[in-house]
Image (cartoon, rainbow over all chains, first blue to last red; front, side, top):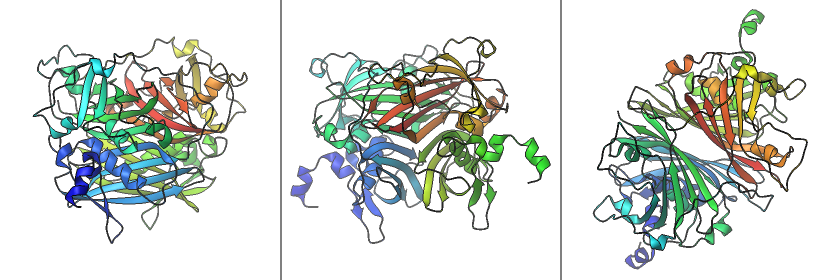
Length: 276
Length: 276
């Protein structure tokens, strides 16, 4: 890639770039811009795997469902993605993807695409009340893990405090916050898939401290077609994260992503490992 | 199988029975006992695919997550399951499964297993209040689709009424009900996986009528190890089903399954196609 071109690409587009190999696999490279503590931010892994299917000439419709299983840590450097078109019907399409490095499969995924069209609609869920993002100070991310610096976080409720351990008096599980790509990037399915994973794991919040924890599986549903998604542009999304149960080393986490106009664009669940 | 043996097996165990073939695949047969309108009840498909991994001599730990993608209708008769051990770590294990019939892959799945152990616990979600199951009349299932006759449904809230169309005045999305296997069967991961799919698709309920609709992907998380699960025995579970958005031909549906003792045993989401 020429330097001139690199300068025009958003870091997320660089992090999710895949090069077709002669053997049919796709090659990508981890991005320092989205590095987390011990591997890439999981949201970029989700975006890479979704992008592997989205980039196919056989793509039919838009993503409806994406499940990503985080099988092992991903090391800095190159990785390879195998994409399989599982089944294509008249209006739906099923994909499976595997991300490998030298020592085996590090992540697996399945995706469902569908041709969406206007139907009877009903939207019983309501967007939480929140002050406009411009009235809230963004969380300081300078000097922190690189991936945090790729997003703007403006908390409405459930501001994380990792400095006051409260194992015996757990804090609330819910957070509400405005989120956006930094630098700004017009919303598409790649960035939406990544955004479904940007919520701090709830165990940090309820226990008021960091501890060993990591997502093992995440499922995201998309409630919009590409055309409607494009109308969001670079406006912040309102995110809601919550959890119901922490037991025997695993907890569940759920998320909602609302457009600035009050449409529910994506919902997500994940199951997260934690130690002790 | 001898007739004497068949008589001792529960219909769910027959429906999920898999026979190893010489080529490493597993062969199963659809069950008339769990037949739905146009194919097997999706819960049995989920149980078959989970069972394919659970039955492996390489199994490590208990199921934590299961995603099933319903790619195409499954016809009456034999099917074949390919099981792949994707990755085994010290305390987690990843699987992928595919169910095929003559014309291709009809269902795909991924599962995460994990060795669970006692840790710090926190259970912020609360079981809904419900009168004891014995005080509620079971829904009549005689003469209806076979799979309905394999379960007991005792509604606490959100009783389905498919005879009064209300497209212009949608009913509530939520149902609360006691559910159990018929005949009774001690709870295990197979039956729990099937139970995560027993809730009527919410679109029937909100619109007060049946219409073409079908689950395309379902993800279930299990919040218990096998030992704790076994303590449930044959007692009914309290189920909660809900939905947030119906748009452009797809809606989301969520579910909780609570033990009689008030423990959240499983949570689940699915995305469901609907026509018009």
